[in-house]
View 1 (cartoon, rainbow, N blue to C red):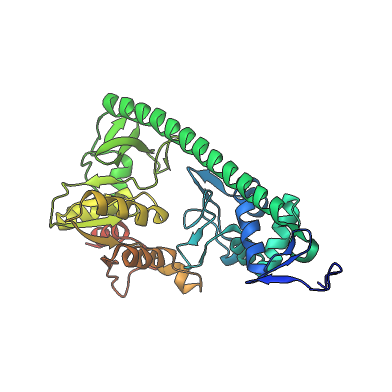
View 2 (spheres, rainbow, N blue to C red; view 1 turned 180 degrees about the vertical axis):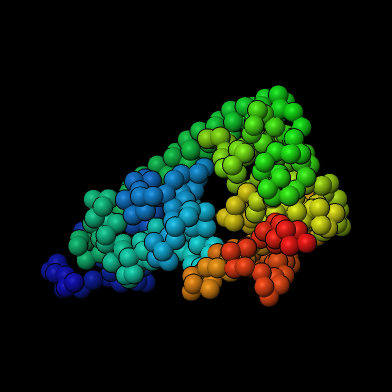
Length: 356
């Protein structure tokens, strides 16, 4: 957009990329303007994300929606960090460093246009819409930085308090529960042993651990419906099967049934991360806590989706997690006649047992 320069026989003074005019006014380079809007968006990202991705939900410091760009129907593979604005789709590999790049990705537009849209939503000027006062620019930058820090501290405190309350409830219920009935319908259907699972009424309890302590529980109903109590910690946590020892192969998988199956078949320790999106986070935590363990990611293989031309979310998440953890990975070895709807190690084990 053309701009009018103030009368000045000497013309504008140029410092690097920034043109400074008489009176301390400046035209900011586009990349700096985009970063300014990206920083401003982090003051209150929740409202922006609810507007852009209304089906998402907040989990700790992250926002988990489905990804409309690839027609995603189930949340878990697409996450946005509410503190930094970084985002990642583990299924497709798409990722970015701020909320401007996210909106550009969602709208299929340039980042300059995305920044202009966000600026409009926040009531801020953008680019050639104005000449910025350098002092006002610095005041705004410091105000945004203070609000971000205050918001992050408040969020962290609230999150930790919620985790602490949920951990107390989880340990109470865990203490009240009895060893799981081997004939529980979920265990029977999945053809797995109870292991260390417990049972409260008709509900199975799987302990979710953080650094050796139970901090949450996955509750599995007789019909297989799974849920976590609200407010409990999940990111970076896992449900262990077997004893983790130095130098021993340690598998990291998504779900309880898959973990139990691999543990029974190999005798090796297995950690269930509870979701595809948490495999990497749990793996990083295990790598820190057990640096001498030999990590292996055991992945789901969504072949049916791949056959339909859709992303194989389980396989892609497995490959990505293994690359980030610098470790190996394994997928089920499917016989030629295995039905496409089978996707994990437990599916394969049950199918083989039924055919035997």
